[in-house]
Structures are given as C-alpha cells and as structure tokens.
Length: 89
Image (tube, rainbow, N blue to C red; front, side, top):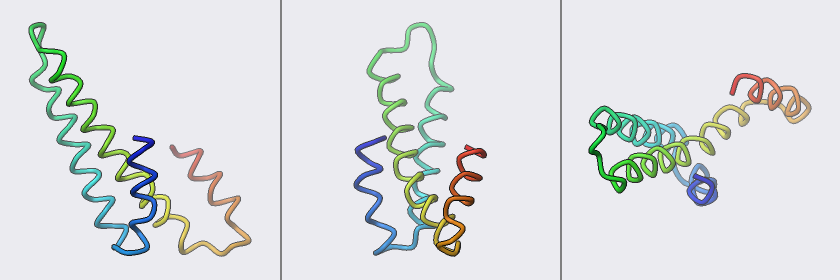
C-alpha cells in the first residue's frame, strides 16, 4: 500500500482523482470478495493475493481521496480539515 500510494500520489495532477479513487475502491472490493472463498484448505498464495489486492486498492484510493478532500479547502483551514479527516479515518 505504501509503495502504491507514492506512485498514485502524482496521478491526480494528470487524471481526475475521482476516477483513480473509484478504481481503488473497486480493487479493494474485489480483494475483499476473494475472502468469501477462503476455507481451511485455502492455499497461502490465495490469501496473500487477496491481501495484496486490498493493499493495491487502498493505495490507489488514499492519495486521490486526500486530494479530493483537501483541494477545495482554503490554505488557512488546512490544519482543521486535516484533523477532521484524521478523526474520521
């Protein structure tokens, strides 16, 4: 997630952040759906792939989401907006 967030952090300047965040949530939902099929006999690679999919999805979602939240805020209110977002997370 940390590596994907670093790469994705530059994308909202080129692409609409809502599209990137949507793709991230779709990947996260797909990764969570993969856990529906987990049983006692599930192989470790499948669980690892599910967790990796969730990490990639959240990495794709977090930076554009932060950009979408903070971009309409005036500079003098950045601290307040950031603390409110942190409280909600």
